[in-house]
Amino acid sequence: MQERIVEILIHVLNEVQKSHRPIGEVDVSSLVQRGYTQEEIVTAFTWLQDRLKSDAAFLEISSKQRAASFRVLHSAEKFVISPEAFGYLLQLRQLNIISGNELELVIERCMLSGFEQLTLDDVKAVVTSVVFDMDRDVFGRGRMLFHPDGTVN
Image (cartoon, rainbow, N blue to C red; front, top):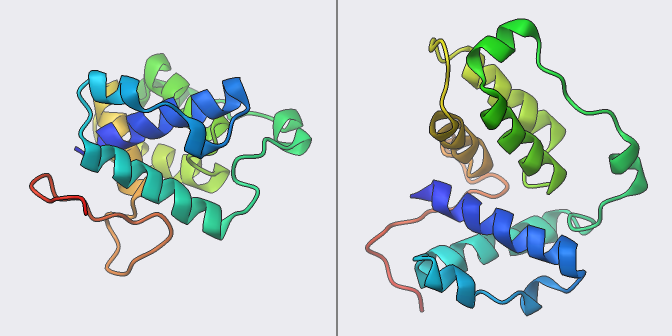
């Protein structure tokens, strides 16, 4: 279920980059039409708000970031992470949903998974655990509790 929140984040941040509008002006009606719940949308916007509080320049794509090198997979990593899954990771990095360190953490967890070839869905699950700090006992940056039967007030 948390993977759907990351999909919403991708949609919203792509819209912000394309239109150069503030997050609050992004039209979410298309998300509702695509089957996302109000709770999922609110959870995604809450994550964005928390991220903006901790990193004021989160939405800015600095010239330093644009000029920075990009991650290339080692041949062993290419064996485990499909090109489609790696493209997804690069998209998340470009949108600043994951940091460079988080990208490395996702790749490391994929490599340590023991699987020969991870699917895109497998990598999405790893990303979700990193983005929402699901494996920690303390509330870290971006950790969200999401219960599908909950209500939004």
